[in-house]
Length: 295
Image 1 (cartoon, helix red, strand yellow):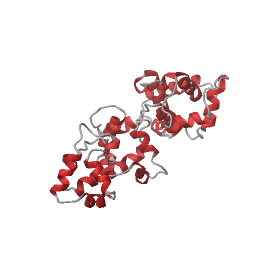
Image 2 (tube, rainbow, N blue to C red; image 1 turned 30 degrees about the vertical axis):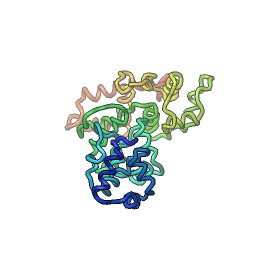
Image 3 (spheres, rainbow, N blue to C red; image 1 turned 60 degrees about the vertical axis):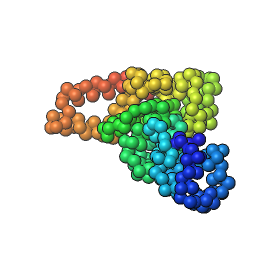
Image 4 (tube, rainbow, N blue to C red; image 1 turned 45 degrees about the horizontal axis):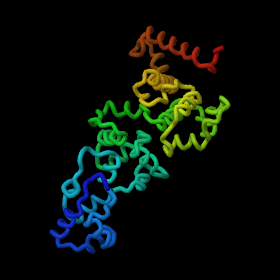
């Protein structure tokens, strides 16, 4: 049954009040008279994305004819806009609707570039879309402020999100490893923990469960703290260090910090701050086993 409440008796009363036949409604919704009869008898229910059209045919407000308890999640917003899931690929410009499907299932959050097009198509703000996304992940929060939007998108929470976050952000101009290369790194200890297909399933969200052994092996393969792949890593201090380290190195790679440092005291960084950055870079070089100049 859809998230909105569907009452066949209420629908039948609304139809009769307009002096419409079941054939009339069926023709408007492109279904058979028998399908409409099944809806009105509560033997079956229409897909959620068809409810806005149903309400228009019966000339009733959507919230009045099909009320909903609580706030909408991503699937609710899509259905209220009248889109079947497969149609969202056209909205976000991808070959498939997998990104939206994964977000609605609470597997992987939407990429930032999809937020604007989806919000526009659904007739909501980006903040409202983000709040609905959190509900899809089982997190009930008020709509985030504009300042919080980008920060929330940067925090990976599921195993799928964490794998993709590292692939997209941790290689700084280098080619990220393939699924087969990740599997090879995972299995370097001599025990076969995962195949390339296993990695692909986790990366795409087809598989959402990762055993403790798999999580530890993923951490080893990506050379990050094991805590990064634990549940709740977004609040784990060790995992936060991984995220902040990647963002810091990304800023250096893009020239943002170096350009600011070059300006010195001329509205740039102070000498003390530049010295601190140098200390941090030296510490990173010492900790990375394959860093230039390390033993």
